[in-house]
Length: 59
Image 1: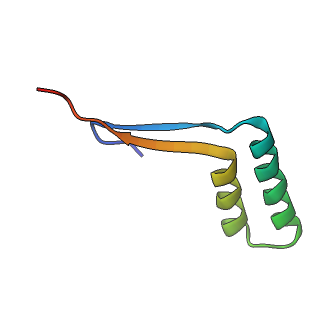
Image 2 (image 1 turned 90 degrees about the horizontal axis):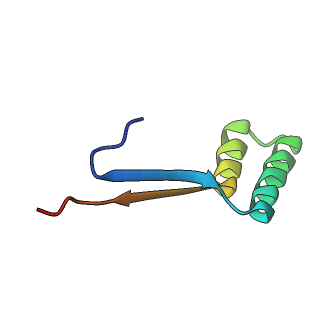
Image 3 (image 1 turned 90 degrees about the vertical axis):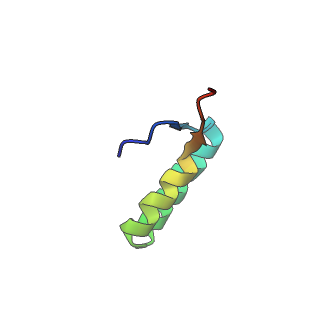
């Protein structure tokens, strides 16, 4: 996926306690036989901080 011109996508790990909670929650969901196509994206949304910013050039 390539963002458009003028769009910045920042992805990084959240602070350690939230990342541990997300990882533990995802592991618990998989251990409890939740479908992985649901558990893994939810855990990634908890663990990762995704910010999408749009900027325009000034003329």
